[in-house]
Amino acid sequence: MAAAVTSKRARGDETEPAREKLPLKPQVVRIEVLGDEKVGKTSLICSLVSRHFSEKVPSVLLNVQIPAEESDENVIISITDTSSRVSDLMRVTNAAKRSDAILLVYDLTRPETFQRLRRWLDFIAKNKEIPVVLVANKVDINAVTPTTDGPYASQVRNLVNTYPFVVSEVECSAKNFTQVAQAFFLAQKAVLYPVAPLYNEKKRQLQPKCRKAIKRAFRLYNRDRSGILSREELNEYQYDCFGVRLLSAEIDTLMDYLSSVVPTGVAPDRSGLLVEGFIYLWWLFIDRNRPESGWQVLRSLGYNNGLHLEIPRERLQLPPYEEDQSAQLTPQAVEFLTNLFRQFDANKDNNIAENEVEDIFSICEDESAPWTTCSAISSPLLYERTLVDGKPTMSLEVWLACWSFVAQENPQKLLETLFYLGYNDKLFPAVEFVKSRSLTRKAMRIERNVVSCYIFGSPESGKEHFVHTFVGGNEGASTDEEQIILRAIGAVPDRDTTKYLFVCVGCSLFGGENVTHDLFFIVDVCR
View 1 (spheres, rainbow, N blue to C red):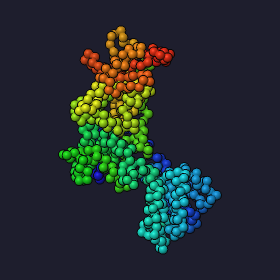
View 2: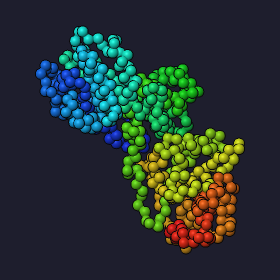
View 3: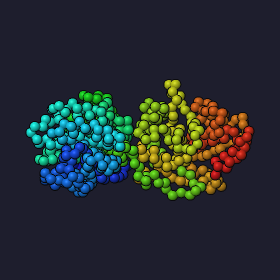
View 4: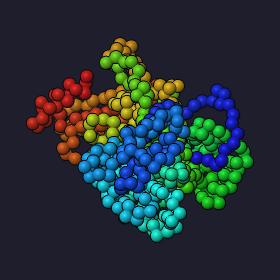
C-alpha cells in the first residue's frame, strides 16, 4: 500500500506479474435483519429499497435482492427480514446460518430492546459467528439520547469488547433515511473486506497469515531481488493493484514519513522500501479501518477470504509425458532458483544458512523446504552441509540438487512451491520430461540431470557408510535402527556439466525376516 495517488499512465508492453484474475470476492452478500418486535426492522429495509417511509408495513417482508448493477461493489445484496415471534425461531435460526452478516436492530426509545441485545448476541454466537452491525433505530425522535454520548455509550463499548464479531455500530432513522444505507454498507463491507483475517484489533497487530502474504507481495514486486523495493518497483506495485502511479514528490513524502516512524523500513539512501517499511504501510491502512485497500491487493494476487492462495488449476498442470519419462528442471527454472539463492546469500560466499533457507519458504503456506515433504517416504533426504563459522550451510550446488530431487519425485509439488515463490511459468515452463536411461544406454549418454542409484547388499556390508560418505560425513544421518530406507542427493561433475546423483539404499535388504518385503522394495524402486 502507498500514499495518495494521482497520475495515471499507460502500461505499454510492461510485463504483468505472475497472477490470475480469479473471482475471489464473494459474489453474493446475504444480510439478515434481527431484533425485537417493532424496533423497525422492516421499515429499515423498505426505506433502503424504496426511499419511502410508511407507517404501515408488512409484519415480515419476503426476501429482498438488490442486483449487482445497483451495488458499488458489483455484488448481489440479499436481505432477509425476520419475525420476532417464538414460533418463528427455527426459521430465524436457519436464516442466520445462511447469512454472511447481521444487522441487529434496537429501538432508541425503548431501553428494554437494548437490554435484550445480549440475548440476541448469545443466540448468534451459538449458531454461527458472523459479522454483526448494531443498529440504533429511531434517532429522529427528539427525546432520544445518542448512543455515542449518552447512557448507552459505555454499554455499547462493553458489547463490542465482549462479542468480537460485533464489527461496528450505527445510529439511523428509517423515517428520515438517516444512515440507513450506511448500516447496510457496513454489513456489506464486513463481508467483502473482513478485518479479522488481517488484523488482531485487541493487540493492534497484523495476523501471521497476513504478514506472510505481505512479504510475498513484497518479493513478487522486488523483481531485481535486491531486498529493496525501488521507486520504480513501488510504482509497478501501485499501478498493478490500484490502477494509478505515484508522483515523485509523493514518493519523497512517503519516504520522509516512514523514515520518521520506522527507520529500518527505508533504504539508507531512500532509494526504496525495505520489507519492514512495506509491512508498516499495510498495518497503517488496516489500523485506520481501511481493510479494503489490503484486500484489493490480496485478491489481485490470488488470496481468498481465508488468506489461502488459490492457485489456478492450469498452473499446476504438467506438460505431456510418457510413462517411462522423468521430470527435471528447465534451464529457466534453474536460473530462477539460482537468483533466489543468491538473493538470500547474505555473506555472498555461495552458501546459505538454515535460517536463510527458512526465510525463503516463510512466504509459502507450507513453510517446510519442499524436499522434506515431497515424498511419500518418511525418511529424511540427506545432503552435504558445509560448516561456516561453526554452523551448517547449504551450497548452491546442493540447493539445486535438492530442487532437482523435488522435480523428479513430485513435480506438482515443485510447481506449487515455485508459484508461491513467484516463478512465472506462463512465460517459461518450470518442468520438462526426458527419456529414461534405458533408451539412451546404447549411446552411452545420460540426458536427464538426475541420476538415480539404488544400492543393495546384505546387512553390515557398508551401504549406509557409502551414503554418509557421499554427503560428507555422518552429520544429519539417522541412527534409528528401524529405518528401512536411506536417501541422499548430491552434485557430481559430468564432463563440462553437473549431474545430480540420488542415492537410495534399503538398510535391511536380504537379511533377517524381511526378505519378501525387500524383494517387493527392489521391484518398486527399479520400475
